[in-house]
Image (cartoon, rainbow over all chains, first blue to last red; front, side, top):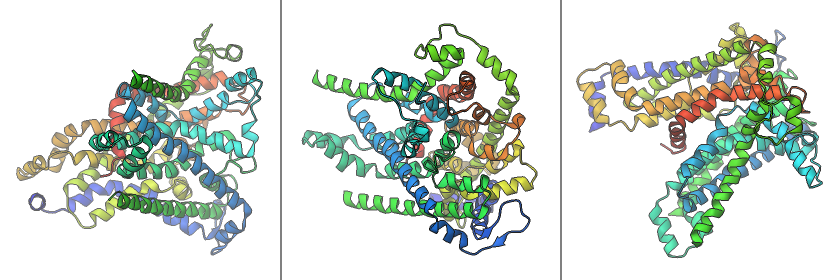
Length: 300
Length: 274
């Protein structure tokens, strides 16, 4: 009833398009059109400067999949995703559970401080951690020396560089993910949890069988943004600290697209890499939704 | 008694996490007021023994620092203003109108949040160059005049306004402009403020796109200026880098401290499906 009356009084709803138009224009020019242009460019050999592009069909994609470097970068990307998920998805979940169950006092205070790094530039974060983790003169190295431990030169070491860059990124991402997950976890009905506790259901079962399925919508959201935004956030520390090195060991799909385009000037390869990234993101989104659907089904 | 001890244990765990997150910021502020020698010899003195302003003075001497701060502010202010206006209008249309393709359009706009920036980076670079905005602040601003997150957050907030209120206004033939100005804006003010602050802070901290567009020092933003002081070894300019870091953090931190409650509430809302 309400809807019908609203529609009638509005008369022409064409005005709605007018209000969406400014946003739509911006998205069309700087989002949708570029998306198609990148797909188009991925079929060409070009260096951004030459007046004419050379059509090469699927050659960029073939070269990409034949190059062993691609698999190294895919592996790195998977490693980044895994580390980012553990620190910024699994840990916030467990921490939220603890905070909502055990700690009643000071919740807002903790939330406020844990969120704080999220408003600070990742360039600042990168510089700060480069100093703190400096293997020779940084504070951590000095403390380690007392115990007779020497820190490895992580920025020059193949697996370690990637781990440290993930940590720097997590410093920024963690707080946001935490407060979102906490909202999801505290949103779970207290009655259900109380009932389970009266029945002496062990804590890990409460978490696994009640909290997790009942906050799955929020969980899915955080899971997805940890991957999609996390991989893009890592770009900044990679660019600032290692430039993808040593020997591409800390590069990921996002950074490599940039590297191909603005360091090697291979527009076609860069476009092919970014299209592959987009396809992977879409696949991950679909898998994520399927998983949650299953979880919700399981709950019934 | 037992439960109290138990909860103590968890408090300690959380406090450790809080420390890991906060210590870098404390170190940055502390080191920015130390001389380089002092920073290395009295590393763990949080409060500098001989506080000095020389790092800050040095920054202003070495760089067009005032200009760089103004650039950062200019970009963030314009981007925020436009994002708020375009998002508010779009959200209004999505909440109060019925039109063909509404759900599809909303889905398409929101899904842009999941497009990695590398997919649009080259064409946007070409477009901006073509418009003559390379190494120009407008080159940074133009692609960011609207934001799916803004449409999403403001739509969420508008949906909490009782429909009858808007319907009554329609019955009286009040214009859309007046409805937005006199009913919607006052009622969604908290969401509007925090969304605006989130946009401002994000733009202030932005690095990826400005680093592609801006080339000369006098057009730099703070994040780009900061990058000039980086060297893998910690370097001779380390305390100066800390001073620049502090100045880069200052505005976002002040805004965050003032509007903390609003910001956290809005971000909390962003994770709840609607």
